[in-house]
Image (cartoon, rainbow, N blue to C red; front, side, top):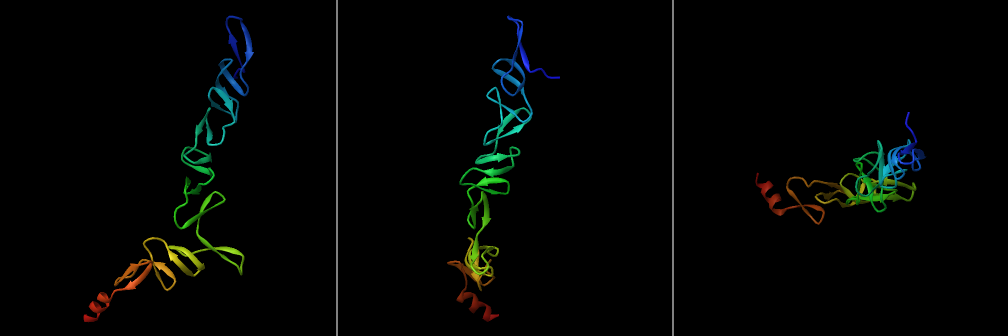
Length: 172
C-alpha cells in the first residue's frame, strides 16, 4: 500500500504530500500521483490542453493538437487546424475546415438542403455530377475531372485536342 505522506527526519514527524500526490520525497516533490493525475513540474495535475497522461507523466501531444490519446494520434486539433489522417494540419487544397476536421469540398444543394460531396479530383462543383474546376493535374472533360487521355493535353484545366495529334492519327 502506498503512503500519502513523507518523513521529515529532523523532526521525526509525518506530513501530507502535495495535493493529489500518493508518494512524495518532500513537501514539494511528488513521485507518484493519484489515478487520473499526471506529474508536470513536480506537481500532480489533470493534464492540460495539449498534453496527455501516460503512466505517471503529462506528455506533449503532437504539434497543433489539443487532445490526443498518444504521441501519434490526435483527437481534437488547435483552432485553425483540421484533423486529417490522425494529424492536425492546415487543410489542403480540395478540402475545407469544418468542426475541426478537413472535409472534401462540397456544394450546397438548395433543393435538398444537404451538403453533397463533389466527385473525385473535383475542386469545386455545381452539382454532385458536374465539376466546375479540377484539382491540380486533372482536366475537365464533359464536366468530370480526370487525367487527360492520350492525344490531348491539359490547358487551363481543360483537356484539349492537339491539331498535331489529330493530323498524326489520321495518317495511320
